[in-house]
Amino acid sequence: MNATPFIVLSAILFTIGAVGVLTRRNAIVVFMCVELMLNASNLALITFARANGNLEGQIAAFFVMVVAAAEVVVGLAIIMTIFRTRRSASVDDASLLKY
Amino acid sequence: MIAFWILAPVMVLSALGLLFARKAVHCALLLAVVMVSLAVLYAVLDAPFLFAVQIIVYTGAILMLFLFVVMLVGVDASDSVVETIRGQRLFAVLVGLAFGVTLVLGVAQVSVGAMVGLDQANADGNVPGIAKLLFTKYVFAFEVTSALLITAALGAMVLAHRERLTPKLGQADLAAQRMRDYADHGKHVGPLPSPGVFARHNAVDTPALLPDGTAAPSSISRVLLARGSVKDAPGSAQQVESIGGDDETVPPRDDSGTAGR
Image 1: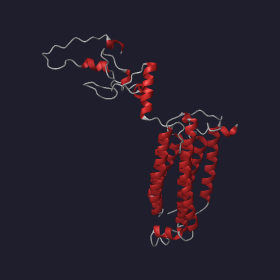
Image 2 (image 1 turned 180 degrees about the vertical axis):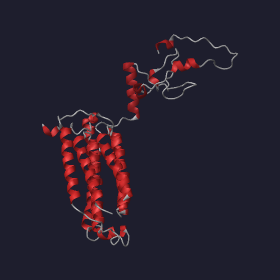
Image 3 (image 1 turned 90 degrees about the vertical axis):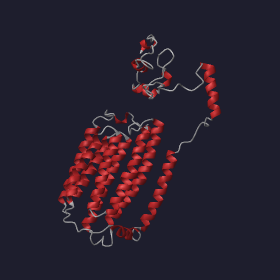
């Protein structure tokens, strides 16, 4: 089994996630794209773990998952708070710090 | 490798759907497809523990959280296709393509070679192997993780908590308010008429009939009225040909009340 297809798939998924973060305007969908990028990096980590024959890559992927869970909880709470005050989940509307 | 070649196109297509789906719910479902496929790839890559964690944590917990927030936030204008910064989408796609091509070319030039495989590392099982590393070499990071999780839980509670600004209305206050409405505007004090008190249709989308044969607007939920899915009650009344047996004489109906509908 060769590692390169897995890494290329991981790169493609990461790119799609990055483009999504740049183009989408709904904050929830932007967040989903961030999750996609984290998942793509996890795939690369686990592939490298198998390619190198030790479990450290899997440990790193495990920590990424834990941090992603914590990040999602706080991020979604922030989105909800912004939606409550501004009645909008668009990333363009939250521009109070600009003025 | 067969699993990879089957799942990789599915994953890429679902991820692309994430870019083009208009509704946030569709995006969440497409993301679920990507994550379950990733879990299968983890199993292919000799990581059964992360296979389970991926399904439980990502598709189980995180995506449910996403769906809950989508339900709370609902549909708003943030999905409109109007660009707020001119040319932003074009440049974003260009930069993304350049990034992706660079990444894929760079990866393709590096030869990772054949995989060593995890047969030696997974000799006593994958979970004991991970536990051995996690509780020896990475034990400090593991403990710090618990602090992170507690902080995140507290932060979410603080952010999602809403302080009540006005005292909660009790039953006595509501009754007093109802009497005040009656005194000021003459609003009916009793309960609203229930919908569909009708032999053929007793569903909530059928309005109750007033004594003159017209529909009572207060018997229908405003949501159904706005959706336009309210049945024509007087029309259904006229479909009834006779009440009781054939020998009974049916009283002639007065159609003046139904002319308006």
